[in-house]
Structures are given as structure tokens and as C-alpha cells.
Length: 269
Image (cartoon, rainbow, N blue to C red; front, side, top):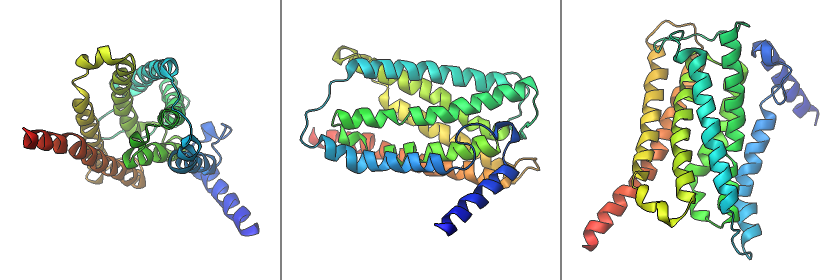
């Protein structure tokens, strides 16, 4: 127990020294441990506990709850896209080539900080997707891509909020908020019922949009390896490698879902 307490104390001291002092007193911001624990509990529920609990139960009918949840996500994503954009990207204050983090208490810097906070919170709200899948016994939706993506993001965004809440790193959040706006709009329309399916032909293009998003993140992050910019190199790799990982996962999903299906359809003709 003593070695573990020592590790936690050292971790807290490190993040107190290097973290953004403006958020030192915020809940869950001392160390990444709470976020890590929540993500581990999420993985256990998604892959083990949830399916076991639902094994001998009928699927829950959650149409109204899902509609409300998806609509909430549309509003939240719209809010985040607007706030992150208006904190710098849409105002001309931010540069696509190099944007250090502004740790001051200027209005635009504080606006970006609070947008980053809500983006971090949104990564936990995203976990509700999986709860709905499990309760409806849609276990095929709780695939490797889904679980990896949802479990990594809360922990990753903790580091972003704690150490680089704004600047170059916020480009990822801007793009991702827009993609989520489109994605949850699709989910909302899909949840309305079978009568909407004829209008949802663009599902595969949504996956393409997600892959384009990660390509943009990769290029935007790794360009700083060639540019002298006051932004931590470790976060250049942190963000860029996230982009690479998720691009490969989404590309594999796209190939498995659409290209293989198209090949089978042509073969069966």
C-alpha cells in the first residue's frame, strides 16, 4: 500500500507542477486516476458485466430515451463546435500552422478553457451509447473500434485539459465536435424509425468523414515536427498517434462494413 500511495503522491506533485494552475481546484483534475478508473469500469461493463446481466433478459425498449440522448448530443456538439471556434479558430486569433496555448486569464483564453472542460465532460457522456447498446442487446455494436475509442478518449482528454487546454491541441476538439454534430444527427434520425431509413443512405459517408477528420488531425499535429512552435513536442506525438490509431481502426471498420459487403453483393448477383 505504501508504494502505491507514494506513486499517487508523486503523480499528483508532477501534475500540480506542470498542470494548468487555472484548473488546479477543479474536480477530478489532481491526477488522471479517476478518469482511468471510469474507463476501466466502462470496459468491464461493456465486454463482461453488461452482456452477462442481459444474458437471460429481454432487450429493453428505449426509443424515447435514445431520441432524447441523441438530441442532447446534437445540441452539446453544436455548442462545443461554436465555443471552440469562437475562442480562437473562427476569430482569426488562432493559426493553423502554429498555435501555442494561452494560459492567461484573458477572456478568449478562459472561454477556450471552459470549452475544453465541457469537451472533456462530453467524452464521459459518450459512454452512454454503450449502455444503450448493452441494454438493447446490440452486442455486435460493442465492437473493438467502439470500445477502444470510447475508453481512450476520456483519459486522453484529461491530459489535454490538464496540460494543454487550447492552442494547437484544440483543433482536434473542433473537428471532432463537428463530426459528432453530424453523427448524432444521423443517430437521431435513425432512431425515429424505419420510415426514415430511405433518407439515411449517407451512413458510409459518415465513416468517411470520420477518417478525413483523423487525416486532418495527423497532418495538423505532425507539421509541428518541422516548425519551430512553442507547443510541447510530446503532445505533437500524443495527438498525431491518436489520429493514426483511430484512422486505422475506422478504415478497418469501413473495409469490413462496406467494401466486403459490396463484394459479397456483387458475388451473389
